Image (cartoon, rainbow, N blue to C red):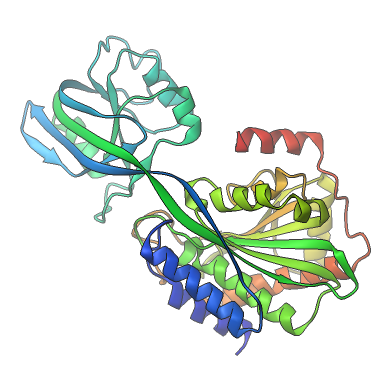
Length: 402
């Protein structure tokens, strides 16, 4: 079976909702481990746990000037609340938007650090945000208050659908009744690891990663069954074409919860980090309409190396230099030159539209074929590029990881 067809079969098999800690996520991990064993490899399962949240009750009902209960999800780790409150839409939650707010709940355009800081520092008692497009009809995605936002402060919050938020504004919602009850839990998941020893330089490593968990809606085809398939295809190739350097393959758990699997792996394996020359990550590939690219977290000379490699092969490729929002950045935090390969385009993530339809097996093969050739060239080279993490990148990664 050729590369494209092999990856496509993996993506189809893995396209089911599999949030970290769920039985479906455990099933996905077992499928990956079984495939690695079928390819002749050995598997190490590395369990880990992290704090999670269970929402017991979330209610949001407009009480003035009309009565209507809206579908909502409570924001995890934001606290608990119950009662009747004034309600006001405050757009970007700027100083001017918040003029006159004296308690109650406010609805802002986006739950980001800037707007959330303004709300936390205001007299508002809680917040409402919205997600998706106004035409979306699927379920709301559960939301948690991330670590960086929790450090700003806690105020109870809810998410509603964008269409409902528009209705609330147009119909002049001015008072709500809301209830939010939640409790903390421990979530168990695992990283899946397999190693192909190097034949000539076994003490120098190249790591590969892709996360296998999904968010709580959609089937996670694009994000990130495609990355899992890419990693398995590379593993299959190198099992038949032994590398000079040792290759470490990592299928990460709980990336959607904040890169938790890759962070755990980096923390647990300082011995591997010391020997690793480069890190390759896949997150979001395979869309039929789009473009290939890579986020490089390393020196500018490394970006030039990739651009020249692509130009020599007449492969249209976008190369940018920054800390990617994916597992490669956990490795960059250990000072390792890191590459996050992607194919952005007409496909969607983190909602019910993350399905198979926008994906195409041919583009899977093309993207992964390019990365395979890149890895082979790096593996065969004595010193392919500068492996020192420059100060500006180290600082960007430090800020991203917190």
